[in-house]
Image 1 (cartoon, rainbow, N blue to C red):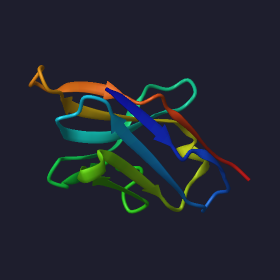
Image 2 (image 1 turned 30 degrees about the vertical axis):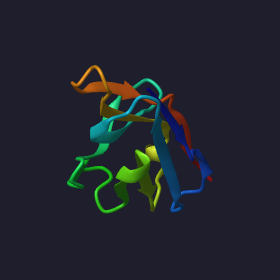
Image 3 (image 1 turned 60 degrees about the vertical axis):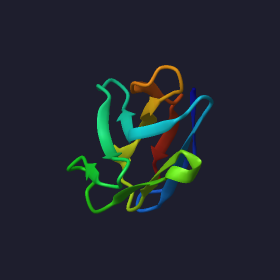
Image 4 (image 1 turned 180 degrees about the vertical axis):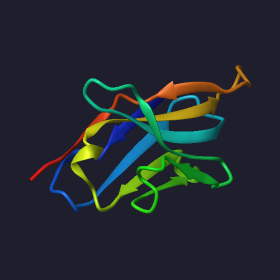
Length: 120
């Protein structure tokens, strides 16, 4: 199983970016999916998470600006980021709790990370 994240880049304050993360390999089903971020010199923190049924929760710092969604048919999770601020600059990581055939219990996988830089 692999998670492939994409969509990061350089954006000006107030701008928008959309991150994507697709799971591939031996995927039977996916439970929770989420996005984390890690700024330079700081600990990794949860940004947003979404259940298989579509219930989402967000870090207080991104509420009202970021939206997490998922496409269950394509095993993909998205993070729409609007009104970006310099403090959103970080490496963003996706993760997913995935059930694979033959294992039949959830295993958490991580994507490789994608850099988001908010700067004028």
